[in-house]
Image (tube, rainbow, N blue to C red; front, side):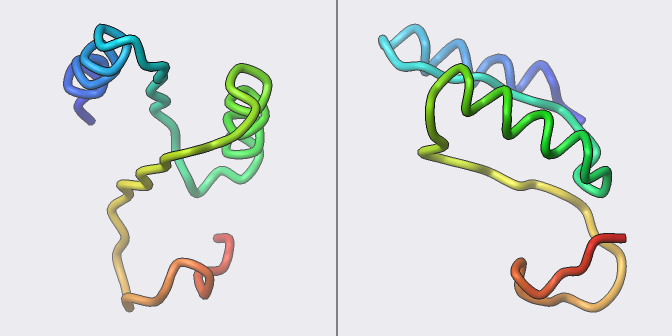
Length: 69
């Protein structure tokens, strides 16, 4: 968890006239993920870049093949 680093990135983007926001959440909580997606859609209208940086224990599979826990 590097919230300071995420905020530093947001500051760099917004300081260069861009728009950005960082969210820290547990991606295994589907309800929280849906809330964040809704918040992003409301604020920006779309998602241009998404970095899903989650640690996973177990077999490595493609993102679209991962089931909800």
